[in-house]
Image (cartoon, rainbow, N blue to C red; front, side):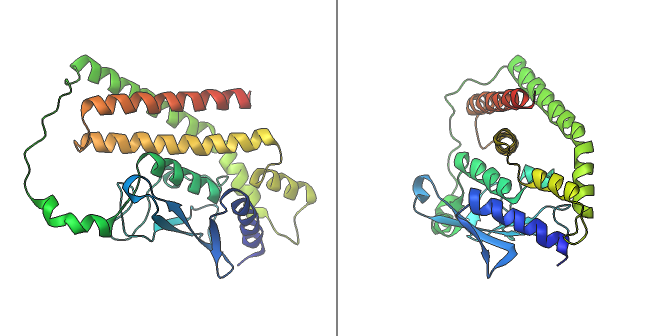
Length: 261
């Protein structure tokens, strides 16, 4: 590993030890971390083990996150165990590994993973044809559906705008990380990079946590859309959850604006 990557991994490890104590490096390898997230509901008491692999191209490229426990979840690939998250799909060089863990916790808190081996015990029963459930919910009117579509479109535009606005910052951070050399970095440049990797200002730390929470809520909205498209939830439940998550996202954005102003 290069001196630059060694320095960055050390900083990431320091953050993980403080903010994700349930994860630890395997064999002292700071590029390979494992930890677990507790199950909920009928799987309470079951630990879901995760593995995070940090590539040599980090932080330019995101880590690879895998679920080691055989799991059934809309964001986990059944064959590879690879976890699909918005924070990974829209990775930025100034993101941190602990934020990935926070995003997973936020997602799994609302859509808990299920143990595949336990589910498979009733596989035959599940395959038996069952009468289509009769919904007691009234269908959402066309005008209501149109309103929801407009709200989704507005949120997508807001997220696109946010991603565009941080492009210049991404370039600056990537440039600083690329130039980092433990033996040949001006103190001023190193200090600036350290302030980005691990800010001492409590307000900046709060902003980082809120940004991580925001990504988790955006993940929930995307999963909600997928479940609704696949007819796994009714229109009434979709409408209720959509209102809740969009409200959460609005409050997070409002708080971020206050902190950044």
